Length: 259
Image (tube, rainbow, N blue to C red; front, side, top):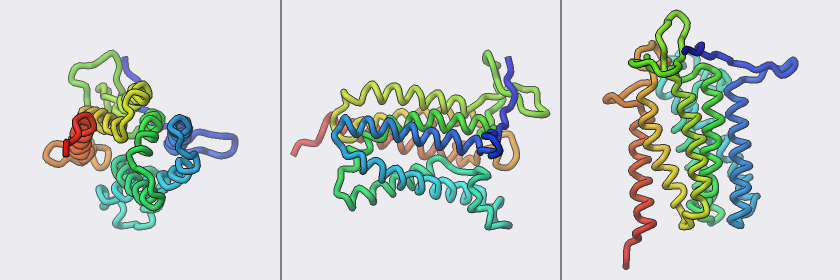
């Protein structure tokens, strides 16, 4: 069974065309915010803190994600620097946005003298549900084309001019986000020490992203294939580090050093 290669760049909303990817990312952020506010209420953290952070996270993640994409695909922008700010045309790197957002959150919380890890634990489930919805946006615009299936599964994607079945990494990442949310939500009342829930997120996302990136295409020209370094994508290298940080961090919360 094959499904056509999806390319829905805009969704008509009356006379106004809405960018499909941007719509799903915005929806993911709003649902993630709602989840974070619910968790903040449970943990007795002021909603104003989460709402302020939401603005910081949105702006910093857009800037960081875009700059990392520009750095990786500089040849696409060197001849027309104005294209750098045309973020609505697509082109962002997930981890670039994440690192920029973490830096922004650290700066904000340090000024407010609030524990980073307590807030990170509040944000973690919302982050996961945001991935679920945001990656649907990637699927709609045909982002992240997959490798050719060596052994066809019960379904696969077919791109124009090529009848071979390919994987759909965006859908895999989306479903992974939904499953990750379910796990984090179920653990949020059991893992009570600061950073524990965030470390579970680091471990889960690190190992799952590392595995799922192997399904991305490496046989297509230009930015249709993710650049690889020593056989791995940049996201895979970062994911290995994230997994390591999560494992060490979680271990230390269960077995703290005795002084």
